[in-house]
Image 1 (cartoon, rainbow, N blue to C red):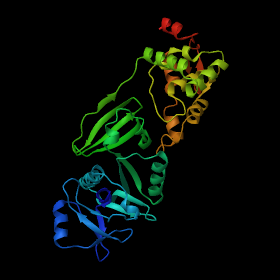
Image 2 (cartoon, one colour; image 1 turned 30 degrees about the vertical axis):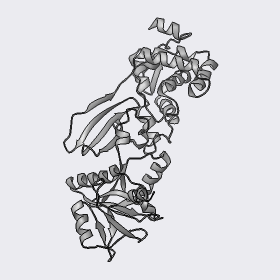
Image 3 (cartoon, rainbow, N blue to C red; image 1 turned 45 degrees about the vertical axis):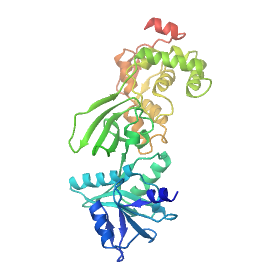
Image 4 (tube, rainbow, N blue to C red; image 1 turned 90 degrees about the vertical axis):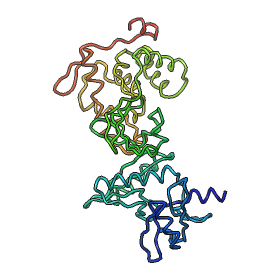
Length: 361
């Protein structure tokens, strides 16, 4: 247990006997400090630190075993190397950088701080699991102190073929959700754009920009319809059952919902229902009624779940994609655009069950 404690209690920044910040950024520098018998102390608790210079992880300072300092929490070799990579990228871009900057009441420590003029940007490199609540709290804490915040994710998230776990770190841009990664083994920075739960575009942005690569894939319309029907048949509770009951109350069967529900479906996160189920609810809500832009926007915004995307404004996110389904209905000849929104030309066809629905496909 003793060796494990020593392994995880690491940092790159300490104070010397005069109270000045000292950084260790290389094995050679650490060896020089050891030869000089330099005495260093923790910036938070002032406990003496050790200079550790093994080859498995970057050179660093370490608390002694059993330390109760808040700065002695776990930190992997990937996380340490990632901070050094982010610092190098910042310096190459012309920023002044500092590692492990303690802010506020000392409970938060910025992995890498970028400074340029009056601008301050806190870079956070996340390799381990982190709840939506902690992401929101840490981001808000930095923002209240005047820092912009950018999150970069490690291999746990980069190598996950499903986007669900990493979505809580997403930020919203004109082309949709973005995610950023620090690929430590390959010394690269990567960004995913236009991110949904099943598809995204991946681009290397440092050290040399690459062409975007489309990742993930989409199911066929038939496959989506069959999958939904199977869930209707098997699920006894949950969101599918909730929407099925809503359909029953209006004389419909969810398994026989119109094919337009499955067309051009972007499986977007951040809503309280899957997007195909939201389309079903939308069709019933607005059936035979004029659809104004305001009521359509309100529908999608009201169904945003703010806990899923803690770094995204639910109001902006819901509004950004609110017109996707009405525009699709216009293209399929069900709606016509008006000055204030849309009006129905004809209603999409519902089916009694999946068998009848597949026959019509």
